Image (cartoon, rainbow, N blue to C red; front, side, top):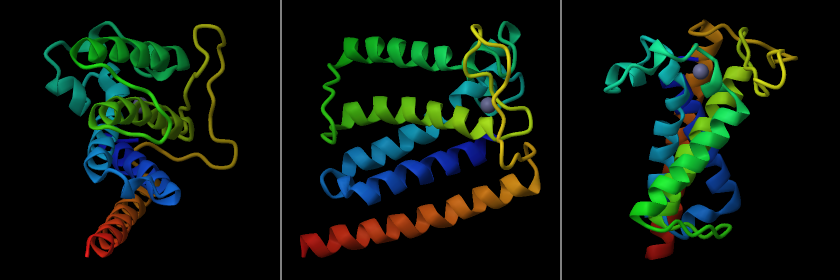
Length: 182
Ligand SMILES: [Zn+2]
């Protein structure tokens, strides 16, 4: 998937989670941060791609020593990212993990790691697939029921649907928040 599609699809999935669980009514500021961080996190694994948007913005081009869809596209890569980010963010402000209790700082961390994870999940359904268990296992996971081509028309359609869903869910959430505050 292209970075824009990753961002849109991941944000739509997380926003749907917020709506279904009604969490969004508790802390709108944390929700917005969660969704923005999801969008950023969803772009990060492609830091291993020479010409990706994240690589071009990064001061170091990581693709020079990372193979595309290598370590950044594995469960281990995600766990390392999650742990290192937790450690670094905790140096600035402590992250308190409590289920369904989001404060803004937690939301940034959670959004970044969820966005990253969803990127891998979305890539799993592409024709190239993702090797989740590398270096312990060799085969790539690919979509069994359907596979899409990166940058193809199916992906574009999916990104468009995600975009429409985000608009609809945001309007719904805003409507509910307004009603509650009147
Ligand atoms: Zn990717």
